[in-house]
Image 1: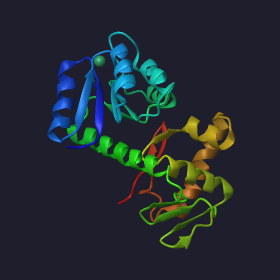
Image 2: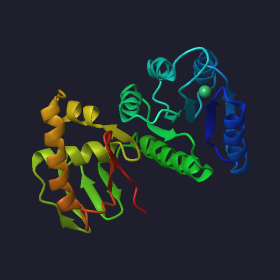
Image 3: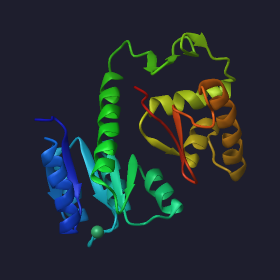
Image 4: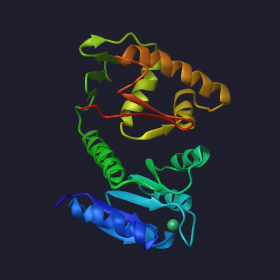
Length: 233
Ligand code: CA
């Protein structure tokens, strides 16, 4: 049996059953909630490893569920949304969600998101140990204490801004970071100009980091939303 416990929050019985059947088939343990109030209560009392959260709940908006859970916990929250607008996704991620799935989604997609989140959880737990000053992902290595990064043993000649950007993405491997989140972390503010600059820094960073910058392996683009560092096996 898998140690991951998934809280499934979904009022639509057919979607809920699809998710729970998938989880059961793959040996995940799960709990269910059918509205926002129940979701917040279950999250607080059972401390699940991951939450799958439908946004359109009968009693409250899913975004408010995220905000309430975030007042006391960083547990990963993957939003299941029927809304396809980029601005909604940005709002969801900025409210503290880790990832999103757009309805209709496939079982494979659901499991893939869950695996990404599990890996991130493992890293988050590993980060608590003292000698996590070196980050590795595929051929990429970041030595946080020395303040340098290399790819395949070759040091990357990064500008301070590119290095900060790379570290921010690496520390959140598996998580989609919105443009606003990134610019606020790097510049301490988020203006339209900053988002345009971010694109420029991302282009130069990718040229140094990626073997083929046009089909990046490490940093995924979420158009209109932000970027995600992917774990490369
Ligand atoms: Ca719903």
